[in-house]
Length: 384
Image 1 (spheres, rainbow, N blue to C red):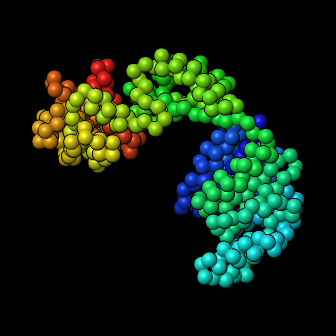
Image 2: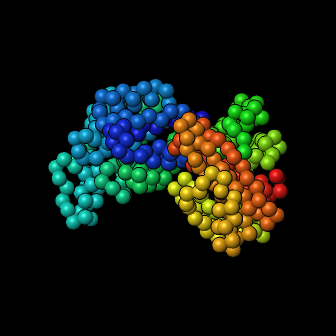
Image 3: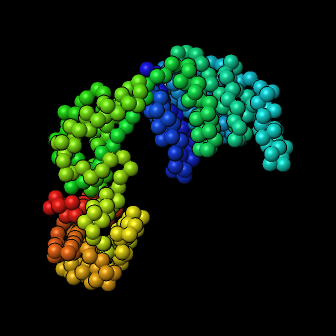
């Protein structure tokens, strides 16, 4: 099975001016072909550094995919860099120039002289026509590696990758496997404690198991490689069953499930409706519930609530909106930690919790909300 590396080209990424979305798209596409992606790298618009990065990647991986630097300007040096890395010269392709001219004509313009640069590609390279832009792409084979150069404009890159590159890779390398990923979401348990329960599974060769911690939520990723989707599903199912038996109530969902959506479904199943009150969270709780609430979420408000007064304020909010259930979260910053009050009003009574958060202050809001939602989920599901 071939290995791959992705090189994103553009100084704008290194300056933090633009977010790289291409790497994620390409990585997921390679995953669907069963290709192992070992490295990703971002390089600025410098021909020497690009050439060095490509040459090193060629020495490690069978597939090297670059994005960006194929425009007509002086600071688009990818063509020259890849030619240098492969020990080739650039050659003008009249048919590519015709395609570029025709594409620009659609805008009612004639191409400028500098746009002719885009019709030059490394000698012996296979051109890839760009039907949605002016930057042709190309494939260079040799030295035990295949280098595929794609435009940096996301929609153009996605089109060429999907319509031309993936079919090429499948045929070129006889790809007959897929990598499928299943992600379980856990709350109410920290990453370290969760690792204690499933750590031995993290050493499995296939499927592989990995953990990713967020603020109050831990993702458990199961990635299986197989010849068919059905085989991958079978591999994943066995490990998922083991993980679920170990983690039990801590797992609240999988893949696209969100904690707020799962919690609201549990509330709805109980026949309850919900209102919320938040303090010091800048409407973050209302925003999350509002996106997933449907008929269950009756609304809420945000206002400053003094310490010790949250439960009463939540009850008033529930009465005002005629909701049977109320959830309150209040954040009180202090010098070395964040104090958090939670209040829950359910048909059978009132409950309160007091928590402290010692992590980065900007993560406190999300952590507090996740703690509150997990608490409500557990109560609605009868876990506590």
